[in-house]
Length: 273
Image 1 (cartoon, one colour):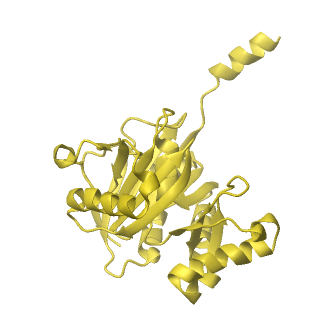
Image 2 (cartoon, helix red, strand yellow):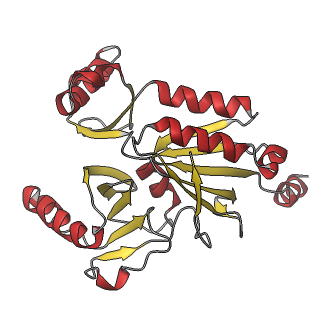
């Protein structure tokens, strides 16, 4: 009976999800089945949004969910957000993290130290670091996650995740151990060092169009400030702004271009937001 049940479970179709990345002037989407992109489902939209406010991206998400295919399928959503809107810091260990509400106050204060008092009104989340270890803290305008949930609910989609782009990229990597990753998107460069799949060091900064030049320089400056990172080998690089990436040949050998977590579209669709 157990064997028959296992065979039946294997015969059932794996449920599809819709992965979406929202940025100040672009949106990626792909249908996933079993965690892998479905062939031909990748879409990349580029839109005008000079102010860079998240409302423009939210309007594009609404338009995406109104497409006939997504209206019919009602797939659950996984939404990742640009690091222009998700601010990350590495918070040191403190005994305040052992209980609430002290933990939330401490993490909010760490964001405020870097980003000012406005951060005290942000919605925050942190990873579940082991005792005594630093934590990665994410802060975001509290209205944005609620607005995404509202759009999803209006179009009858369940929202499974709202997360910073680096988390989505990390989850899309193959199971083989990765020492470090770099993410280029929305005028930001985010670098992370990993241990057993968990971020243990983080650096985020503005990045221009010549990212292939800026990335090696930024990595070198970071390792000079943090000598413990000098032993890191390969750095997996994801460029969400490229269509397609063409600069791999000019990167030092340490940096290896990773596959897009959203697949590679034939071309970007340019629309007005």
